[in-house]
Amino acid sequence: MDEITATLEDYIESIFMLSGDDGVSIKSIAKKLNIKKSSVVASIRRLKEKELVEQKHYGKVKLTEKGKEKAGEIYNKHNLIKQFFLRIGVDAEKAEKEACLIEHFLSDDTVNKMMKYVK
Image 1 (cartoon, rainbow, N blue to C red):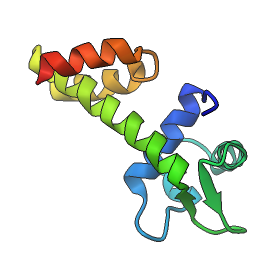
Image 2 (cartoon, rainbow, N blue to C red):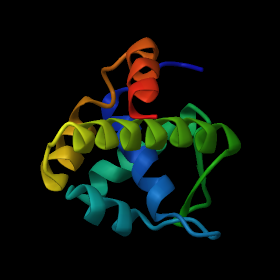
Image 3 (cartoon, rainbow, N blue to C red):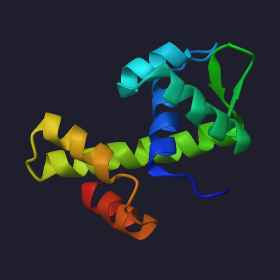
Image 4 (cartoon, rainbow, N blue to C red):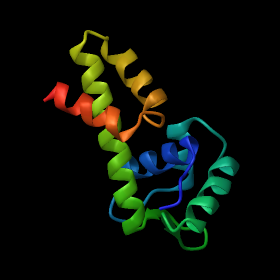
């Protein structure tokens, strides 16, 4: 799969967390990420080009199968990092925030080693 930016990964993860069976609105994504709807629209266009999301004209955004797979990977990595931080004594709010910041930059090897430690 094409590499995607950390920002687009945040979009995918947010869509994954917010989506119901019928998808999620641009407004809901913008609210979760605390950004303007116009920024969301531009990023959704890039995600569509990468075949990670689909959206009918002015409709809700849905992850494609490819998008669901990528979102699951990102979400699992985020949770693993957060759990690691909690285990070493980082408070919950900071663990959440910092997991979100670094989840995009850790190698699979590092994540696998963290997983072994957490388990």
